[in-house]
Image 1 (spheres, rainbow, N blue to C red):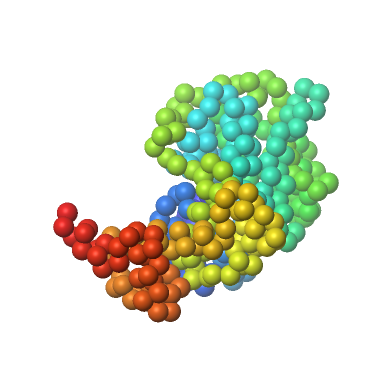
Image 2 (cartoon, rainbow, N blue to C red):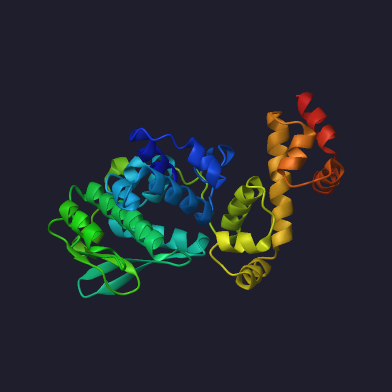
Length: 318
């Protein structure tokens, strides 16, 4: 969901390439919609760009014009349900299974349900922008699905009075709250049971893969971590929104380890780059963090059974 931010900035005529490079985000990392970028890199990019370009409330600016209906395959995959309730439950479940630092849940109060969000590992400013972005996308998605709707209340802890005023302009009939330690908005039962418009549902279940559990998410995150040229477990844990001990415990519970994840990611990328034939073997070794190409060749052979050059020769035969 980083792509909408990029598109918004480009529509404003802002060249993002230099900011992306400065943050360590390569074009390879953004080629696939399902790639997971670490929040550390995303907010490094956003904060540096917004400070330089003097952009306030990026979460509000991007989120207010965005809904899942406008977010391509990822958006359509999330909307693959029968009702608004299905969509919200699906989103909460999906994020809960793959995220280590963002929590979404539904809380029942009388004849309403609250869509709730809690984020850890971000400073107050970044947390507010994250809440604005996610809640606005969700509200807009429901509004488009049912043909026009706004919540009775939206709660965003840490929201400034100035930003609250801007939000009130967009939702003049909504109470804007700034209390507690998690964000939410309320949805009435009649809205929850409203069917999603048929045109918003697709059959992407078998065509588009999102990570379905923590291990899948960690593998995607590790892929980009390797591309960044990083190899320390402390930094990876921070990118995942965990401390090192918790990360190790969770990986052990799934039958793997940090070292194993990194080895798998390196070889998967090596295969991809060898197939593309864009880099020499020594360049691939260096990009994957191997100082000695011989060590890269040994690691590749341990996993695939052949050396990188034999692997490439086999590709050229077809």
